[in-house]
Length: 251
Image 1 (cartoon, rainbow, N blue to C red):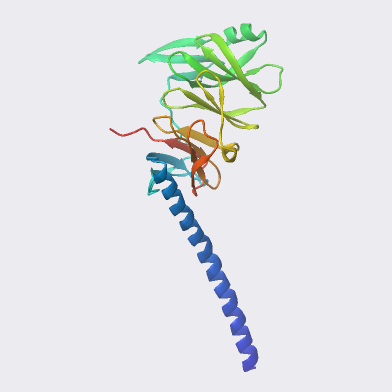
Image 2: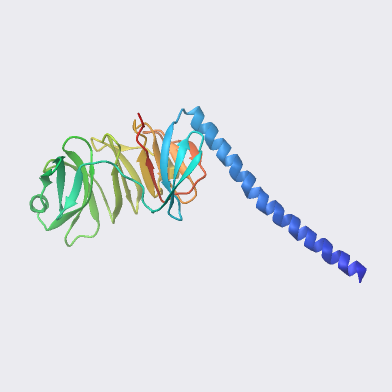
């Protein structure tokens, strides 16, 4: 009986030890990943503050390069907020040109005339002055089109996809990010497609640093920081996110 008790005790101890190793192992690994990310951010001289919505929609600020966190005490799955001046209105695009006043840049009827069929703008992103990008849908056709406009003039068709879930611009309008079922695409203000790291092609959200040198892409288990026009990731931050924005530089 004593021998059986000893065997049972040993088995329980072994399971408990394994559980402790399993519990400590990932924590230690995560700590190592954080240390590596901090070193990479410092080495690349990346500075600033990210506003992040975690997968559970809790929001926090994340200081770079230290990765010091500050909970914001708000539950929201969206944090991106570019202080642009465009709005989609009745299938067209309206520009808030001055306080209390608006200018219609593109009416739905003008888009219909361009395309020869009933259509509507779904999303818009400002690219400086009177240039902007829109994702629009043509009635009776499958999918959406991403294009550049200046005022009411179609400048360039960039891409087509089943659905452009997100269209965002950089702070000064020099770059554009569009996310669809085909992955993340980045463009410059002229509409030329930019290279991106393969790792971020399936990112859920993207934002730029205030100086537009560094995009950050959000995924379920990490944030990837890379240089604009680069195919390699400069730092992989082991914090998952559903949305991200880069706070404006404080004076």
